[in-house]
Length: 200
Image (cartoon, rainbow, N blue to C red; front, top):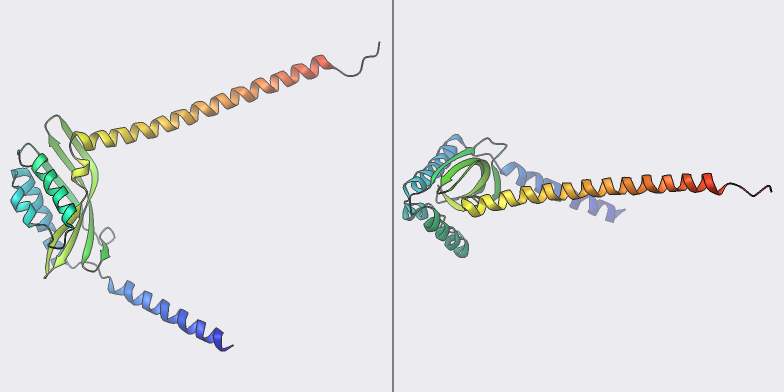
């Protein structure tokens, strides 16, 4: 009986701690959202002007070094030539913003971009922002994986792969139906010609 009481107390403590941690994850304030808009707006403006050093200044000091190098390389490859036009439409509703760690927020949105020989519109991308010393910085983004000929090629390739799978499943179902119909016809013919025992 005592062990049941101990188990009940432990469960109650775990549930209450979970509820406390959930209630502590408060949505961003209006002032926070204005700062988020400023960071993403600055990122957008610097991309359009090809100003890579200013974009790098928006990166969080806690950004993973390898990831920072990868994004910086993408910036110099795709942005420094000033051949890129970019707009990002962040969804700053409380339901859309996710706190994925202490003072780390995932912002979702859609973007349109245009470069030499390619353009995309209506694709979704995320920014991960981190609050450091009361200010927001970019900790990560999947934006550049979705831009350019490579990104468009991956998306188009993915769409064609899904279509191909659906097509082959459809063909497989049709072949299976034809095989079943042919078998049933053969059985009917066999039953019709085989008959019962001979009476002669």
